[in-house]
Image 1 (cartoon, rainbow, N blue to C red):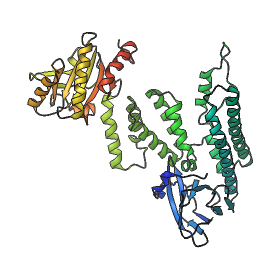
Image 2: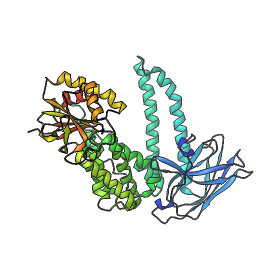
Image 3: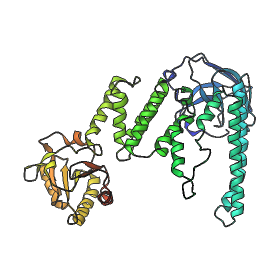
Image 4: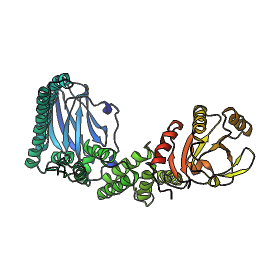
Length: 478
C-alpha cells in the first residue's frame, strides 16, 4: 500500500500497559534502497488511530534494525519512510525477519525473508496494489459515461470492476484455506461481510429485503473473534464496531442498549478488547448529539462502571463518569421532568408541575446571553403563532441574578405571555443540577403528564417537532 498516512505524523508512543499478553519483542532488519542517513518509523494501528512505536536511523547503505525485548502486542504494523510512503508487516508468531524495499515503488519492490507470514503478506500487498491500479485505470472511463445514455457501456465497465472485486474476494478465500493459522486469515475473515447464499422471495416474487437485513445483522459478528486482542492493532475492529452501531442496527436507544450489552459480553473474556469496546461505546454515546442517546451512555455507566468492571479507570475518573451519568438521569427522554418551584415576577412561587398544559416548553435563558438574544424573539414569535391553536405554555426560567434586568428584558422581548420565573430563587432543588444546565439557551419539551418528549433542540425546530409529535406521539399519553 504505497500511500501517505497523515495521522502518523503525530509521533506518539502508546503505553505498553495496553498489551495484555506476554508476547516477546521483535528484531526487524530493514533495507531501503536509495535512502540513507535518515530515520524511518515502525508504527501500528490501534482502533481508528495510528501510532509510532519505534524509530531507527538508517546508515549509509540504507540499512537499520528495529529491535526490542519489550512486551509487544501482535497485529498489523507498518514501516514509514520520510516520504510518508509505507508498507505493512505482521507481528505475530514470527518476530525476527528481514524486509527490503525501494523508495520508487515501495509495495512492488517489497521483499521479505525469514517470516512465512510476512512473505505471504507482502505478496498480498503487491496483489492488492495491482488490482488497485486496474480499478484506477477504469475509473476515468466510468466517470465519463456513468451519467450518459449508453447503458451497454456502463454495464460493461461496472462488470469489469465487479470482476476485479470478485478476484480480490477469491484471493482472500484461497489465502484463508491455504494459511488457516495465519493472523492475516483472521483479519480477512473479520473483514468479510455476511451474505446470504440466496435471498428468499416474497409472495409477489420480489426479493425479501427484510430477511436479507435480518440475516446480515444476525451474522455480522460470526467471523470476528472478540477475544483476540490482535484485532485491536488493525484497522478492522474499530471499523466493524463503528459500522454495526452507527449503520447496521436501528438507531433507537432501546435497540442500541440491547446490542451494547451483547457486544460487551462478547468481548469480556479478553481484558484489552473489553476495555476498548467499553471505551468506544462510552465515548460514542457520551459525545453523541442525537437526542435521546444520552440514555445509552447512562446505561453503559450503570452496566460497567458503577459495578466496578472498568478496571482501567482511576477512582477519580470513575467518580466523574458516574457523576456525569447521575446528572443526566433525571432528564432523559421519557422521564418525568423534575419539578421546578420558582418565583415569578410577582414574587409568587409557581410549581412547574402544577401548570396545566397539553404541551409545555421549558426555556432556560439569560439576559446576558448573546445566543438567547437571537433565540428568545423566535420563541416569542412561534408562541404567538400557535398559542390559540393548541394548549401550549412556556415556562421560561431566567438564569441571571438581577431582578431589575430580568424584568426589563421581559418587557423588551415581549415575553409577557410566558410563565416567567427566576431560577436563582428556588423552593425545590437547583435547576442546573436537575436539568443539566451549563449554558443557555436550553429548550425542553414536555407533554401534559410532564414527561420529557424532546430536549436541547433549537427554537426553530420546536414547531416541526411538535407538529410531528402531535400526529404520532412517541409515548402513550393515556
